[in-house]
Length: 462
Image (cartoon, rainbow, N blue to C red; front, side, top):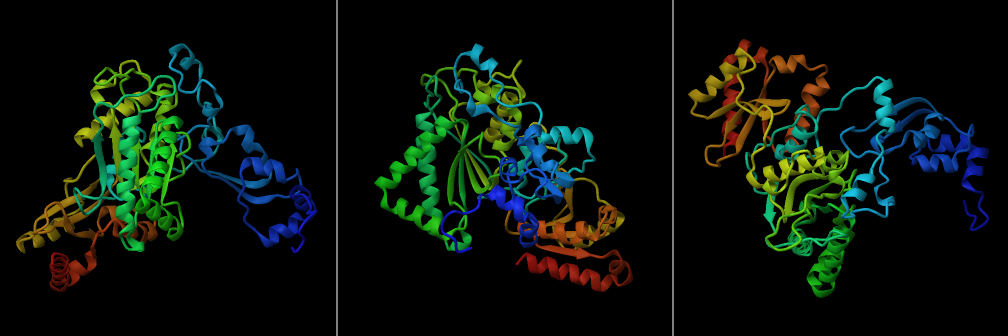
């Protein structure tokens, strides 16, 4: 350990002492390239090989790791990024439609695609990242057929959560290497505003910020503007430096749609980049990788990175995007902009207001209404619903308390861990106050159960 030079090459070290290395470190984290580079065939084997983000791994790259394990677990999302050689092409963002059609921008099959066809699969449907259901609702509609289970937020319309839309009038894009200068300036100014605001907060309350663009050139333009702002504004530079030293992760990053997968931030800013070439003109209908097959998978990654809020800066309106005969990525871009502009999703899934899950819930609701409280049944959308929610008497759009009853949904859960601990944890992270009523208590000792219920509601409404 104390040697300063003439170290044994890692591949030879693993070949000679692989068993001892496994005893010291039972879990190894490696890329497929590192497996091929450092582990000689037969030198070391593993009980289990787990492949994460498998949608981005080519089958030929995965094979070396697969052969070194006794069991294989493949984890990924077929609706997200395929294996990509997009930036290897010198023709990226070329404005010639003939050349654009020649660029695939991504291979059709990954190790995930091959595994789905041959291995037993289990879908993971609970969505944890987004703190407000409006952030993930577009992707749930466009890419997942509203199958994701989303957990509701107690605020119908929280001022710090959800999607915000900022149009950038009179902005234009360059031809060739597509850059939108005015939009980049608007994004950089907003980043400066947010960074200064977060710097003024206590460390535990600070939110992280991410910027994502449609191409590499817009990413570079925004990064250059941020560097210039840091040189011109000492407060901004001090805030950026301090945040970077206090947080365990980058307080701010700027990415593009090709390298954003796997990242997440509390606040995400999207620069839509595309627009007309002349002020007030008609935008060209070329949207880079969204025009190509598989573009919808890139766009799905793009719009699912935010935990608290997503801010959209756009120089193009939804009605300016022609969708007839276009690839799915362009159609999704059109629908997403329409949603950001209006707040209305074309197919939002099944919303709240469904019938009560059981007669037990109906009785609980009647007790609350007789006490003068306003309630709503089955609050939620797309998969998970709180049985009853009590509206706050003085704060419009806020639910003061969520009430969980052990009705049909509760008893249909496969495990107590699913129906109790995990769901309650996720809901409380989103700001819910919860009160659970057991049917046995309600029917055996109704007076005491009703008193506990009303005490909980009164306490939550204070």
